[in-house]
Length: 158
Image 1 (cartoon, one colour):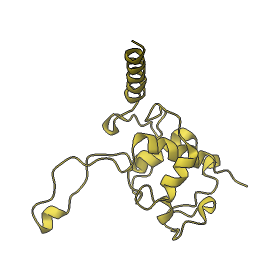
Image 2 (image 1 turned 90 degrees about the vertical axis):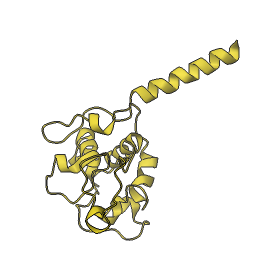
Image 3 (image 1 turned 135 degrees about the vertical axis):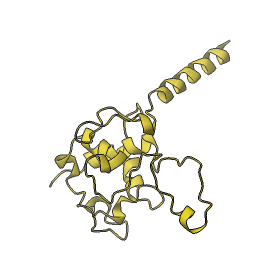
């Protein structure tokens, strides 16, 4: 009986977290591109957010932005603004919107939409005629977006 109760409790807890996640197509952007509600329903982890920001196979934010806090990560770019002081310049809601889909705030930005699954141009059709048609997953998960927001919010002007 205890095992059944424990299994049920864990199942319900897992479903509660899952139920809090917002699907990429369901994200509600404000007038200026901000996203008020958490995408995962779980608080972000700033330590994991720093890993996502500096990892080439994840956010890879340093390829376009300079960031003193991650000076040990090589090849910082200069296309985007410095992320130093991001936590003072933008609110968590604004940061969430920028990371999820910066094009909602800055129409012509080169920044990728990290939490988008449709509306992409697949240039493979022009060359091979056989570009995939399957849905593309978002670059980052809802929780990774929240983690990056938590990390960026810690970056204050010195």
